[in-house]
Image 1 (tube, rainbow, N blue to C red):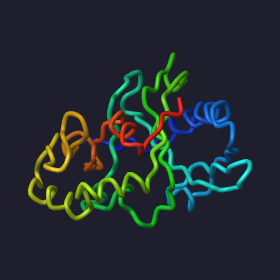
Image 2 (image 1 turned 120 degrees about the vertical axis):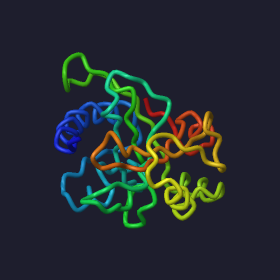
Image 3 (image 1 turned 45 degrees about the horizontal axis):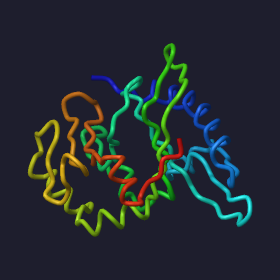
Image 4 (image 1 turned 135 degrees about the vertical axis):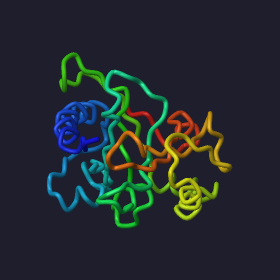
Length: 202
């Protein structure tokens, strides 16, 4: 296994051009500005939405299903932890150091030729609402760590008592197929929209 980090960065850069077009066409009340400095990007800010009237600013962290080009998955993976040099590090979902207000989730990414992206769906997820909802369901950093510690060698899907695995979500361990061996909380996008946590932009 080798890391796809470099190739993913190139794909993300090309995908961002398409996403900027969607922002311009569908966010009538906001100005958008892409962030290029590494410090802000590491803090979970890829784009800033500024309301044209109120001037309120929202920090957007873009996430994309780049492993599933030309496929339309009903779920999205929210990163809980990943392996770096043999040690697990905290993922972005519960990281208190992130400044993110909304996730812009790019799914159903289609290309006519390699890395020439033609369409995608964008779902905006309110991070604060998501974390509050998960906390009410007792899907917390500590509760998920307990699940992970019980299954240190597991690869694949793990059902949670707190979520319905078919309609809401579950844990997924990618220990055999990815060098970063991420542990993700997989959530159904329609479920998040139905709960008022997310909204489809396009």
